[in-house]
Amino acid sequence: MVVSDPIPTLDQIKETKQILGDLVAETPVWPWTGDVASSLVGESGRLFLKLELFQVTGTFKPRGALSNMLALGPEDLERGVTAVSAGNHAIAVSYAAKVLGTNAKVVMPRNANRLRIEKCKKYGAEIVFVDDVHSAFETVGRIERAERRSFIHPYEGLRTVLGTATVGLELMSQVAALESSLDAVIVPIGGGGLCAGIATAVKLMQPECTVYGVEPEGADSMHRSFASGRPEALDKLDTIADSLAAPHVEPYSFSLCRRFVDELVLIDDAGMKRAMGLLFEEMKLATEPAGAAATAALIGPLRERLAGKRVGVVVCGSNIDLATFTELIQSSD
Image (cartoon, rainbow, N blue to C red; front, side, top):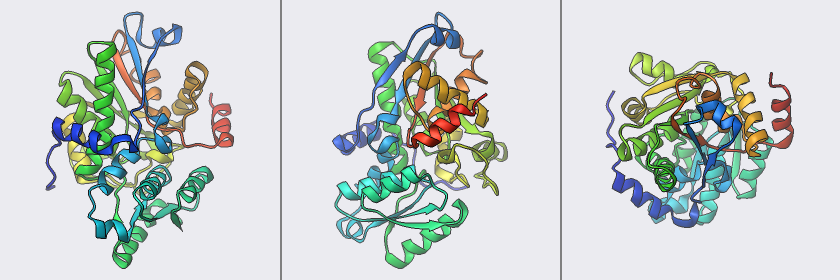
């Protein structure tokens, strides 16, 4: 496996944050306190939620999309962009296209959440529907070639990672203003772009901090890639967290995850439902399943290991309609 893009530097990440400017929000870090928090990490532990669900468009995705699109030349930008996504990246690219004065054609599965489809339309994007996420990548490739649009990858490449790394930069800086350091950071993994960026920033700023990547059991492409030592693809995806259901891992994000992620953790759909309910009950946060994935790892497989630790939990998004949210919460055990 040959990876051409270099490892991001802290200066590059800081510069990217400046370039993104007020096109994205610096989302808050919130200390989770009280009896429930103490039951999760013990009396001596501390919990900090990075509330990226308050980002423009409802997820972290505009950071990577804008990082890529702001680097396009005038002619490329004028020709427009294209993207493939179950929803959140499509929304982010649609938003970025609108604020940068260009147009987007996004490829989405037919069964994508209606709320996400409507958000793309609100930002003026043209939507091409396909039967599944595997055929979506083939379709977006044809659009890219035929219309000479710039393809904005959902989770691969240096500029994507520099964008997502700004989440980690903010998290570590914000916690430092409240606390001296973090012992662990928990990050969801779909294709790996978010985890690659955050893990890179965390390790550059605090090398001794442990980074855990979290995947659904039904979309464990990064686990399989770690096991084989190369990027792997999945024939079947089976998880309620469609935002984490990437069909394959890409070389660059994989290489950074291999370098900077200390351990991968698997969670099931039931765990995400429980975490969604807990975040709503305790923090009044209505998250999509992916947004609750890191919390699911905290209350599940990592609970005993993180007792007494200072833990950062990334709440990555909340693009979910009320009916689906209610159905998932009510079906949790």
